[in-house]
Image (cartoon, rainbow, N blue to C red):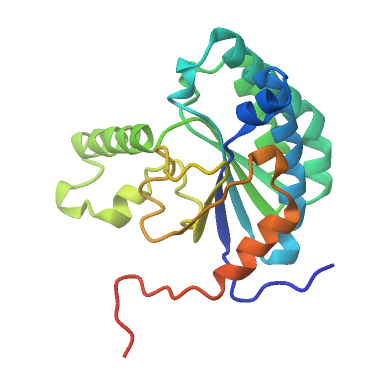
Length: 239
C-alpha cells in the first residue's frame, strides 16, 4: 500500500464529466460511456485510503440533467439501480459508508428505496465516506435549506437573529460532512456546473483534460499529492 499523504485533502469532490464524449469517440451510444464511468468510481474509491482521503463526493446526476433525452435519462436511472445492487456487498465489506445528496422527490420510488437500503447497510462503516449526488444542484440545495430554515423560524424553533452561515449550513444536504478541500473536474471543461456552491467557497480546483472513464487512480493520486504544495490562506496574508 502506498504511503498515506499527510498534508493532502481530507475531502475531495469530483465532477465526473466526459462519459458521453468518451463513448461517441468510440462510435458507441452515450450510455456505454456512463457504464464505463460507473466502473471507474470503484477504482477511485479504493485509492482513497492510501492517499489519506476520508471523504469522496461524486456528481452523478444534476438537476439540469433532466433536459437530456428520455432514453439517456431512463438509462442513467437503470444504471444507478444496477450500480447499487452490484456494489452494495463490496462497499459493505471494504468499509465504505455511502450517502446520497440531492432532492429525491423526482426519483422513482424503487431507486429511492435502494438508496435508503445502501445508506443503512453501510452506516457502520468509516474507512471512506462516499457521497453520491443524484438530482443535485447547488442552488436547489441552498433553496431547499432556506425553505426548511424559514419554516423553523416561522414555527418559533429558531430566531431570525440567530441565523448565520453556520446555522444555514446545518440545513444543507451535506450538514454531516466537512467542506471539500479539493474539487476535480474531468473532460477539459473549466466550470463548476452548480456543484457544491456553498461548500466549495474555499476549495482548491483542478480541471483536467482526461475524460472520466479514462481517469485512473494514478492520475487521481497525482492530483491529491500535488495539493499539499498549494498555499491555502483562506483570505489571510502570511507575514
